[in-house]
Structure formats: C-alpha cells, structure tokens
Image (cartoon, rainbow, N blue to C red; front, side):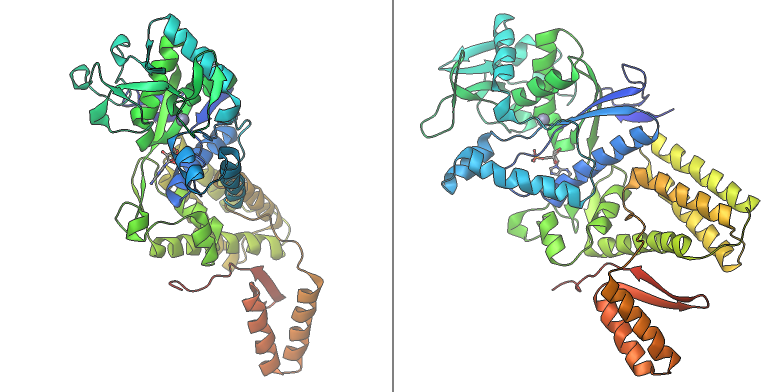
Length: 470
Ligand code: AMP
Ligand code: ZN
C-alpha cells in the first residue's frame, strides 16, 4: 500500500490510480530562460524518484513534462540579448535535456512545448469565456476568481483574502495578491504574438499547463507535481481553469517538494551561492553524488545544500559502488547461505516500506546501507557463496532502478590502461616498487584505483574531483 501526502487534502492518503495499474503523471517542467539550477533539480529528482518507485512497484507510468518556452521571463531575456524567442529558448532546452541525462533522470513520455500548443490554449480560453469564468478587458482576457467558489482550495487562501475585482498581468505574483489573472495577453509592441480567434497576443503561463496536461493525460489525472513555489499561484490557477472548463476534478494527488537552500540561505545570484549543475561539474563534482544528495533528503523537508553534504553523499555512494565492485570482481565458492537470503529479504521489505510511506527515503537508504554493512562482514569472513553473490547483484540492480545512482558494472578498461596495470604487476614482481607506485599514481589521476589482494590486483573506477574550493 503506497501513501502520499496530498497538498489538496493536507493529509497522507492511500494512493490508488484512476485506472488500475497505470499512473498518469504531470510534472511542471522548466521555464527555459536560463540553465536549470540545483534547486530545480531537487524538484526534478524528487519527481524522478517518485516515478521510478511507481514503476518499481509495478505501475505503468505515463509521464508528461511541459517546456515553458513562452512567458514573461523568456520574452524579457531573449529581447535583452537580441535573439528571437525560439533561438533563445533552444539554447536552454538543449541544455536541459543534456542535464537530465547527466543526472540519470528518466525521460518523460512527452515534452510538450507551450509554443506548439497555442490552439489548445485558445480553445480552453474560449470555453472559459463561454461559461462566464473569463472576461475581456482592453484586448487581454482574464480569469475571474470570484466566479470559481473553490478558488484557494489548494493553497488554502480564504475567500476574504481574495482581491476581487483587481487584475494582474504578470505570470508570477505573491499570495497576498490573489487577483484575476491573465489567460491571454494582448499583443505588445516588440513581443512575440500569435494571431488567433482571441485576437493577436500570447498565452499566460498558467493556461499553458492546464491545456497541455489535459491534452495528454485527460481531464482528470492521477498526480501533478512541482516545487512548493508552484502551489500559488500556478497550480491554484491550473485547478481554477481546468475545473471550471470541464466541471470535473482536475488532479487527484498533488505532490510538492520543499525548497533547496544553500548553506542555510535562499539561493540567489547576488549572494554568490547560486549553482547550476554545470557549475558543479566544472568544479569536478560527480553528478551522481549530486543526484544521491538531492534524493536522500525527504521531499517534504527543506534541503540544505552544503559542499560538506555533497562530499558525504559522494562517500556514501562510493561505499555502494565498492560493494558492487566487490560482488562483480571476487570469485565465490559454490552454494548459498541462509543468512544472506534473510538479509536480502529484510532489506527489500524495509526498502519498499520506506518509499511506500510518502517516499520516506531515509528508511529505504538505511535498509540499503545496513545490508551493505552486514554483507561486507560476511564477505570478510568468506561466508558469501556464488548464489548469494548473484542474488546480491540482482538486488543491487533492482534498488538502483529506483535510486539510479550506480553505473552499469564496468566490465573492461581500455587496452592501454590494462597494459599499464600489467606493467605495474611486473614491476612489483621485480620488486621495482618505485616504478609500481609511479604507475599506480598515474592511474589514480586517470580515475582508476588499484587494490592489491591475495587474488591479484583489482581495479575500480573512482570519481575524479578537483578539491573545493578551487
Ligand atoms: P521553473 O523553471 O522556475 O518554472 O521551475 C522548475 C521547477 O523547479 C518547479 O517545479 C519549481 O517549483 C522548482 N524549483 C524552483 N526553485 C526551487 C528550489 N530552490 N528548490 C526546489 N525546487 C525548486
Ligand atoms: Zn506548470
């Protein structure tokens, strides 16, 4: 039984998708006006963990993530550097796809772009106009929040806090400015626009997600995610638009992750604590350590990013990788040990229980590392047999379907590296330890660590990292 905290009800609820065995998931994607920062990746990795866990639990997941390639920010920035909107956003769309690959985030089934769904948005706005939820004012079209009595149900704004009769043009605004908001913005000189039945103009941000989510997932779907900053106004407005248009519940479970802050403070360019994935990669950090760090704090807790934390994440990951290498490279005697069978069973159960409990990743990671500790001890005692090693490898692959942090087990190294390892072996046999150490150091700098064991020299790939700060 899987349970999630639903922002809509404010409670932990048992998760049951609309269609048995199938989950329809929408996650608010990037606004492509800049490189995604590590806060954005906290949201995308939480969503990836959620999706991977649902798949691990046997669900088919149909995932839609939009790309917001037209809004106030993309227009402002493209104009500032004199590129067309499409030229400008392409830079960040490409970067986004590269980044999610680097972080081993499973791709969505569809990535609809806002600029390619203008007819769907126009259609939705026409329905809202026809039903009296929207009105025109000086060429722009606004949503009338007073017409939708349930307005505020997600963000818990009380009716008396609503600023009835006021309008806001901007896509983003604070909760204490709960105004009528723009669905369609009249063409402005110098801004991109579309000639439509609503007149010349462009869509507001909120209508984009309502139109695109319902197009691909239906009028009612299972899960909608984002960061907590999306709750108001974005998701509140999505509900107002969609439910007013269809008369049906829009989303059944709303899941929001809390923010990532840096060294205890909000990330901001002026404070110099603002990091994109690319900043961290340029400093030599291992993207999988960042992935591990971002997923290892429960999504409903604020995540305080520190470089110390990133180092700790890298160390934990290294323990897991060492364990994997140990299983891959050792030879084991025939047979099976009941103790190992029991340890795997217990860890699997705890791993599942943790994540089923509103994605309680701490419990699941405790299960993983306690298995590693127990098995390492048995390995030292020579109690792990061939069948156990196979089961353990299978188990690792299974939990990594959810965690997504382990590399595929390395089978072979490039020939010139293997040559060097042999050369070092020879130097050792000839007791030329100076040369042997030199080669070992050289390999270490290339990210290959050597370990001399009774069974011969073993190698492993380690993350190369420049010390921080630079
Ligand atoms: P944006 O590109 O600004 O529309 O944001 C994309 C996603 O990142 C949204 O789901 C946001 O809620 C989320 N997000 C933005 N900043 C943070 C942060 N500091 N921590 C966690 N999530 C964030
Ligand atoms: Zn959205």
